[in-house]
View 1 (cartoon, rainbow over the protein chains, first blue to last red):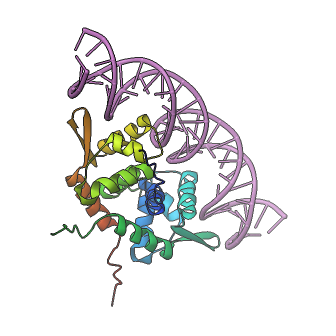
View 2: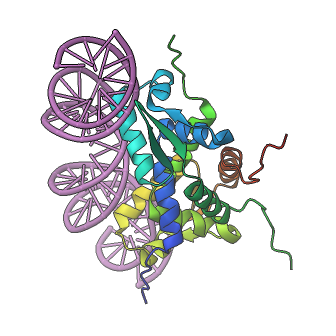
View 3: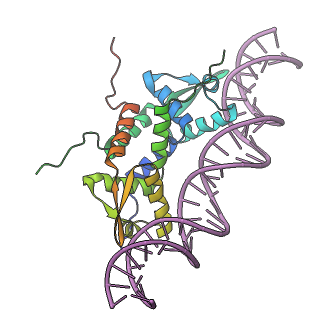
Length: 107
Length: 107
DNA sequence: TAAACATTTCGCAAAATTACGAAATAGAAA
DNA sequence: TTTCTATTTCGTAATTTTGCGAAATGTTTA
């Protein structure tokens, strides 16, 4: 008897978060913004990273769309910061998914 | 003065691990195999999951290629298990990357 | 107002991902 | 040996990802 399973929402959420982190540039940006609550401008990143402005812009858009960062207009710049609430959700989700305690089941 | 940065290896590794986890089916498989050191067959998975055999096979191949699972022939089946060593590396990498302690810098 | 600046959006192309069914492979059972 | 079973590989197609340069947007400065 076959019992097809709808993949649980928490695992689907892990996959969405993982997808947001599946490119080195996005991992770099998230690391930078999540460390010491720092923020930065697109221009800072384009100077550091080995990609052009429009490609960077798309990565920022994707992270924004995933809810992991947010941009605040500080003309003529846009200041990007981590979205603390959702970053915490990502942390919690991975914490639950991975077994950091490495607990062994003891009988 | 522009200082282009080569993205550090540890962040690139996070991106590779995240990519392996960027599809719900693969998240499901890793969860299943990493919990209670269980192993399973391709046939078990294809009965549970909403994809066909060949698509599943490709996901298994991808996880194998990422080093996260390994297959052992147990004819006529192939028994898939988590690769404990690399799964531990993934755990450590995410543990370092994410800030699970949520420590605040206190002055 | 015009020129300069920061960033995004558009249009495009190359490459990767995802999925399927058919065919291939390999071992087990008859 | 032939047949069955479990799984993978192949060929193909649709979709997504990634990146670039050019053009557009909006703001500041001259």
